[in-house]
Length: 177
Image 1: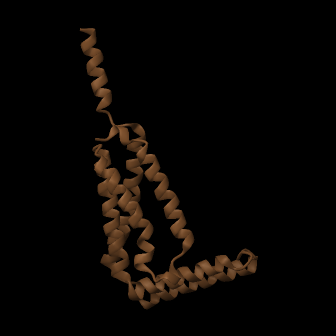
Image 2 (image 1 turned 45 degrees about the vertical axis):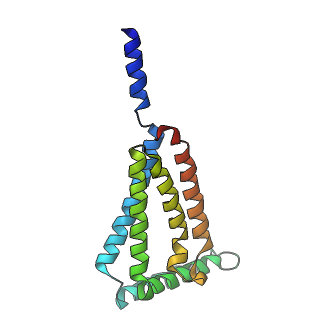
Image 3 (image 1 turned 90 degrees about the horizontal axis):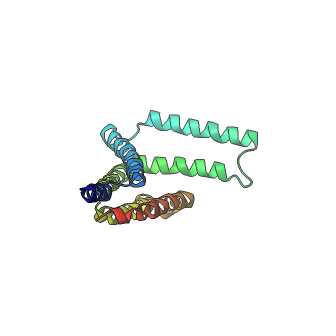
């Protein structure tokens, strides 16, 4: 009789999702949900009008001016260059790549949410799909922007965070079938 209880307890522990996997999946769902909502909202609202673009340009100009005045624009003005490039990218997306940008983000984010769901249900297919999602997320900048507008630091940060999550998810492969 006691052996049966031990066997049942072992079986229940084997069927239990590891806590760390649960935390990773929830973090992934939070990130993908935010991306999906932002993309969907942008697609529904459409590109910014001229007035909104002017407001963004004024805000960027004010930030650049403050950085220069306070001497915090970096040794070679790299912070100012990043803000200017960000403004250039915003204009490019708004005028030339609006649908491509937000539709790509939407599709890739949905792929990430599906991968997380599959890992939630403890399927290894979810892990493999998550790797594809991570690679797609890293490469999105090259699909959306011309090469001159790709910010290398953005790619490196996405590579670092995506790679870290892939490694952390791989630590839970034993719990997936």
